[in-house]
Image (tube, rainbow, N blue to C red; front, top):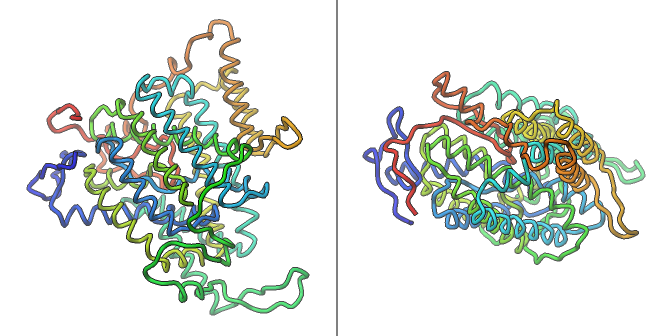
Length: 503
């Protein structure tokens, strides 16, 4: 399993050729490719833990460990980097709003990871068709959409008010880099936006500092937007630990989780999003490499679930497969899993550098406002992307009505109370309405009982891949969203020799 065949004389593959998961190029090229994967995942993997009140350093370190676990579980057949998942951000915000702390957050996420791994075991033995039967695209698309849109007020009321013009300019930067530019640069738009926002705030501090007042609105004094006192005091090398941040407040370092049934129910809908993300990743890699990876879908679920559980056990962030890294593979046509082992090793080393964590923790609120304005919307729109690619028929009331009700319940933070001290809200409530409503409608609708909606859905390659085959483009621009559920990316390269997968 740890043997990679040297191909193309170690040089960049010629046009039309690919480097398969069990192959490699020369050592310097593989190191360089691993570094590209680190840069691609770095911005989102650092930012989202901080938004959830968890240690960015610990998240990066554990993402490297989780990636290695994922690769081992899929037997090196599904190239992927697993970084911090955005699908849990809304649930974490709900947990903290109800008085939960970081231990409650990571305890709930750990259970979600175990559930995902258990689903993976079932899928591995029962077959990939089981996922689409229970969670067809009409349901997964709705859940992904309400997860993103439920976060709207976080971006507009938590971050934006501090510096609205900084936020708007940062959002504009993300949009332009993601859309106007092409290739690898567009795929690291979030990372570049962090740098842009920092520079913008640094310039603004020279022009006009911001007033800071006490809770009564008095005793105001001017302060800089950027406070690097924590960065200066942080060590270059050290174990990740708790820190204070002017933007995020207290960021929790390593800790053991605690478990609360109410909080666990809040994060379970995120498991559905992870199923969609992993399914999309496996589908995209299958299209790009020309290999049938369906037999490894269950293993991919297990790998991501185990990675999430292990990371959260020590206080880290939940993980998922990253569309940004699919973009790197699309641009380079190199799918070697060796590159991901190298990227994971680099991430682990970064995790032991507290100064990097302090740098991200010092990000001004306005910068985060601009980034999250785009990212949260992109997560929501990925739900619509799932519907479009699978040609979900919303002329069918069995699709339209339960989804409409569930999305409004999720976005509007509907609270369903079962007892005086137990209720489900927001995303959990919306997911419950969509899932139960959809299957109930199909069971009660004449002629639809026992007939899966997937029978009438598009089963060909993702639209992005089909378009690329049609136009013969050299590469496909991939969304920079970290929670890229069902996101295809890049060229569907044909296999060089039609060799079957080897275990």
